[in-house]
Length: 289
Length: 221
Image (cartoon, rainbow over all chains, first blue to last red; front, side, top):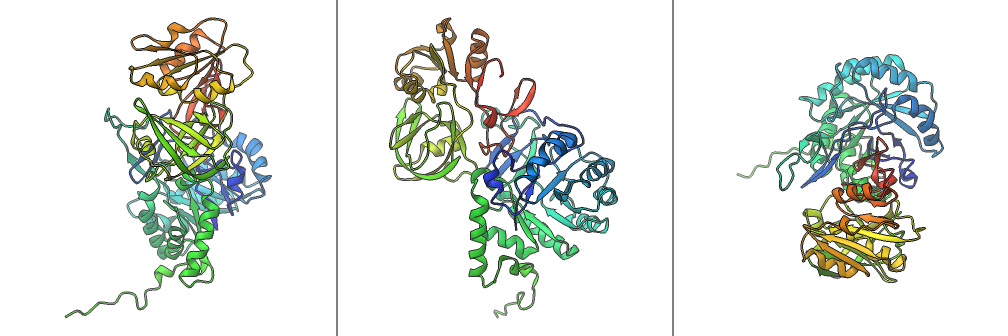
């Protein structure tokens, strides 16, 4: 299954790209409308991209009345990403969305590096959201947590049905001539190839710790990258930065993923699920003397 | 919106700028002022470039090599292959009676194509140095000023102004010609409304320049 990473596609502006996906994930919706951060909001780095969009979105009221009905017409399952500043915000957002059949899953964005952190812990947020909706809940976690597997376990214990791994990690770029921060907010979220091994480690560790379904994301540009996330424990893969460079990335990566699975002897890409965890016969000490 | 990987037909140096010409493939040239995303070799993100020249066989982009992406773009060689996505965004309205093109620096980039489509209207162009002003050769009927003189000195009343250039120039043009059509610039990661990187303030709200613009009427901008 191929999804977009939240905030990396506007399905209404580019429906032909959304049509290549199995599931469309919305940009994070907050209780009130947000214009987002001042420009400059993006910068390219040697191995990635920094963004500091700041959760620009129309707010939950306009989202459910104006955006959601239009998304439903695209006939692609819709996951709604929500974000707030307290557990109560998340509970309110989830109870609002609970009434809409067009919302397949709610993704709890508890890890945006570009806005103030929610006051409550991930476990408190997930528990509050769980009490507010019977919909499937995925917690999107930050790779910057000291121990992401502990956070994942806490999210699972609080009622998360799955995990989205990973969000961006905070980074900084300086202007070539002035040496001032390129982004208006100074730091931003780093995505792209630089995030790839970090995402892979997070998926690997969190799958082992929780066994929960995982949407793996972070620098996926090829079918090979996708199958590695699946082997580490992901049940689906999401694309972010690669969509910006190549609007045909979902279709291309889907066919590359199938070829890669076949090349490696798996009947389907998902047959490679958790293959990285099959340890038997892998770790052999070589006796060389 | 269409993306094709096109062979480079040639790169011509024009002062400090380079005109990167690619074989056109199946891409439309679009409306002057629209832009294309060009993917520089070995860089993560494509760069937005307005179309400078369109012939039956080629599309040309005038590029100022100011950073790693634009430098990689002007260093391509003939027959290298360049992914190109477009045309994107909103170009100039072409229903103008007395057009005057007003450009500054690399802002001349869309004017050769625009001039051709408007039957070579008068143009006033400003540049930082004589070397930069070599790009004026691409624009017919152009009057040129070089700093410290400013292009706004040459603005005449009674024209439909179509402008492209650095922000201070656009601000000055907007004050003198409230009906002007202005082509703005912003860093973009995608060019088609996905990344929200190119937000600019339009009528008091932050909006995506790639979708709402890049050409806006002076009053809306």
